[in-house]
Image (tube, rainbow, N blue to C red; front, top):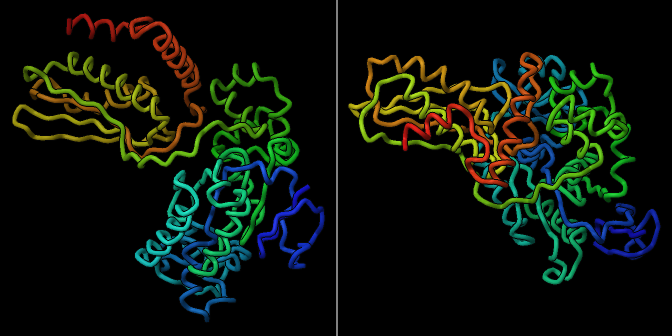
Length: 423
């Protein structure tokens, strides 16, 4: 067993409730702490913490950062949360729950500066930083021991202390073997926390938790799983993998992995993409709706392939058209669940196209894209359309075949028609 002191940063093999160097009790005890390198850092009640830092009179008072009485809560301090106040809650409800709260209007520039200061301190530890939002990020400190002459756990404890000392806010840190468990750990000991989960500890820790404890399981999926008798993560751990895949498609595999703490996503530090798209300019201006729909399908496949290659899904589909007179027309639709599938792109975009391509207007360009991006975790389960999972599974199987045997190994009738027409 190892013990790490969060105050003097002493790491020892002692198994005690206090630090044998400074005598303080703010220690972390874990047998795996020296072997872990993936971390999740979350600034505690970030906006509210900045406001309390800048106005000491607010220190012991419930603080809500948000708009006027007709607005919503951007964030709130932990005191306000004790009264039931939550982010995105209508302001009138928040003030009803906590009438003594101090409401502060958001100051974006002040928060941006503090976030940049936190980012600079993280960059001093590792270049592998993946921001999730303005106040949280994943870090990969694997292999940094030689550079910092300390294990990732010690470096992170020092980082938390430096942020508190130099920026005046506190952070909670989770350390584990992957992103899912690191984020799970960071939420176990808030605020000003530091928690560690070793891979061998994941099953026991996760088992008693409800299904929606898994990040990415929203109310809709949680309701379906509960109705199917899967109420706790332990139920998923015990469930047969083939049964889960047969019932939920790719989502079943994702659920099984997360239930056992498995997450193979790397910490990515590449620049955030705003959209994934494809477009084409025609040799001649075209007005035939059927021909334009065929071109749309080809671009949906191309865009889907790009999204899959980058591991991204989008909530917003955008159709772009340019007329013979060079007038640009854009039409958008927001989805209930994000996608990267060609079939889903096409099913939604062709409705948009039908409203514009009536045969009377000639077009010289067509394009399709997805935005409001996030990382792909699993294919969504739609209670209103049970065929979604089957279509997704078929497309994934087709992707595997094309990757293994070539682009023409599996091809739809529409794709074949488009290919023959362009030959």
